[in-house]
Amino acid sequence: MASTTAPDLTRRDGAARPDLTRSLTERRALRSLLLTAGTWIIVVIASVPLFSVLYMLIVRGGARLSTVLFTELPPSGFAMGGGFGNAIVGTLVMVAIAAAISIPIGVLTATYLSYLEPTNRLSATTRFLAKVLTGFPSILAGVFVFAAIVLAMGTYSSVAGGVALAVLMLPTVILTAEESMRMVPKRMKEAAVGMGCTPTQVVWKVVLPTGLPGILTGVILGISRIAGEAAPLLFTALFSNFWLSSLAEPTASLSILIYNFSAMPFPNQIELAWAASLVLVLIVLFFNLLSRLVGRPKV
Image 1 (cartoon, rainbow, N blue to C red):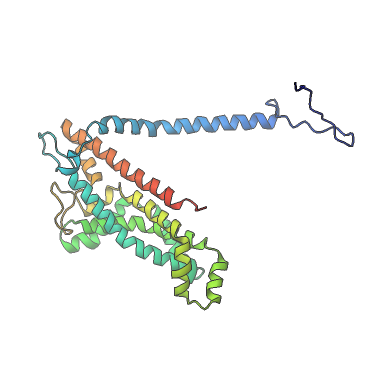
Image 2 (tube, rainbow, N blue to C red):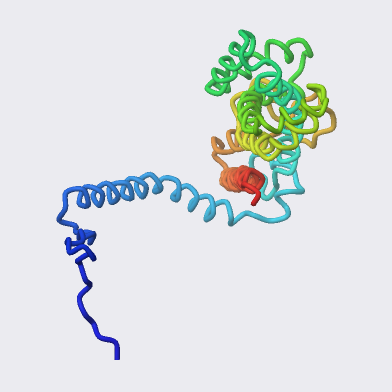
C-alpha cells in the first residue's frame, strides 16, 4: 500500500526548495483571475446580439426553407408562396464577375509589391491606396461605377454590379496575397535564382505555389465580404423580378431582395426576407469556413 507522505521540499545541498504552489491570495494570481473572468464576461455580452440574430434567422427564416424558394420567382404584393431563385442566380453571377476581375489584378499587383519591386515609391503608394480602400464606403463604390458604367451603358446591369463588387474585393485580395507571398522563405527564391531561373519562373514555380493557400484564403474572404453587399448594387444592378437572361440588364440579388421585402406590409414577403437572410448568412458562413480550411497550415 502506497504511503502518502509530504513532498520533500529540501534539495540535496540542504537548501529549502521554493514552494511553487499557486495561491489565489497572491496579488498576481488574483489579478489574473479577475482579468480572465472579465474577459469571459465581455465575450458573453458581445455574443448575445450575434446569437439572438442567428436564433431569429433560424426560427423565422428556417420555417420557409424549401426547394420552392430556389426555383420560383418573387411573388407580387398579395400573392402567396414564391421564392427567390433569380436573386440567388444574380448574386452568384455578380460575385463571379467580381472575382474574375479582382483575382487576376490582385494577384499580379501582389506579385509586383512582394517580389518584383517591394520598396520603390510606386509600391508604397499602391500599398497605401489598397489599405485605404479596405475602409472605403461601399455605397461610394456604387456611385463611382454608376457614373463610369451605368450612365455609359444606359442601363443597370449585372456587369456594373460585378465591377462595383470588384472594387470592394480588390484590396482584400491584394493585401492578403502580398502578405502570403512575403512569407515564402527567401532561401527558396535565392535557390531558384541560383539554378538559373528568371524572375518570371521564380514567381510561377516558387512564389505562387508556395503562397497559394494564403492567396486562396484572401480570395475567399474577399468573396464572403462582397456576397452580402447591398449599397453598391442599388446604384449598379438595381433589381429584377425575372430570371437573368442577359448581363446587360437589371439583375436581382439576395441583399436587395431582403431590403425590398423587409419594408413591405405583406406577411409573405416579410417571411421570404427572413428566409433570404438565412440563405445569405449560410453562403457567407460557407465561404468563411472554406477560407479556414484552405488557409490551415499543412503539416
